[in-house]
Image 1 (cartoon, chains in turn cyan, yellow):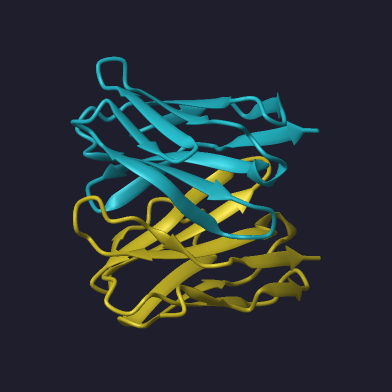
Image 2: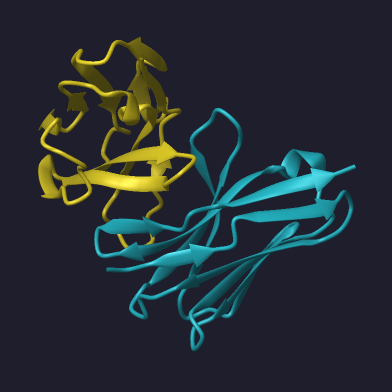
Length: 109
Length: 114
């Protein structure tokens, strides 16, 4: 079946940039998503990218898509303590969504 | 709209008891998903419905788990009998089936089976 992979943990210092990486298997995915989950909460959509785009920027967030390598990344500029959370990469697959295991981002003061 | 509403937020039950989790999707959304999240296995899709019809229940772990969607505004996930290994956070999500539509998640139900 379809698979989405991510590294499980990332630690950065406050003020540095964070880069969270994701690989996926379904080359026909039309949309790819980044979700954020804060402690005790559900997942919330951060941003998404259409598969014919290479890059999308939204304030501190930059999404890069390498469709050839099926690689997606999320860059958070000037990372703040409030960015500490679990970040999920997801791809659309028909009527369904396939989520990665999530990357736990820890922001150190 | 208040978003996806799940109840209860927390449930503690004894092994062997029946547990029913409830979900109200966002009005107008025609896809509904049930996920289970644990530290060991991360986020797992249990089942999803489209227009109230179960489309894929291959993620339902055992016959002890069942899900229904009697109408467009309500779904239940039932575990009978419950076991300690069912302890997890259960999320419901809904979406439109339009391309690019995002899934909106509820706050989750934290289930503890003792």
